[in-house]
Length: 93
Image (cartoon, rainbow, N blue to C red):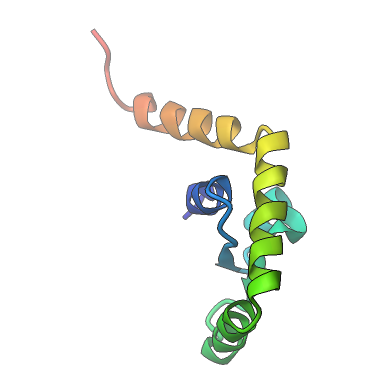
């Protein structure tokens, strides 16, 4: 998802987010997401197990992600970009 809205939605609820390691997501979210190598099912499996095996880690990462999102303008910027794209081709009379 090009603008990374789903990770923002998860972090906004205090839920850690596992994402492919696309550069745009790494640039926007830094170390606040859990990443797996794109097209690597084994790495995805390892990262899922890591999150689900440690409740304290899971809660801590959710809390850190929530605070990051709360203090950043990422959500507002993403929504504005998406809105601009949706309205770009629409002719408003």
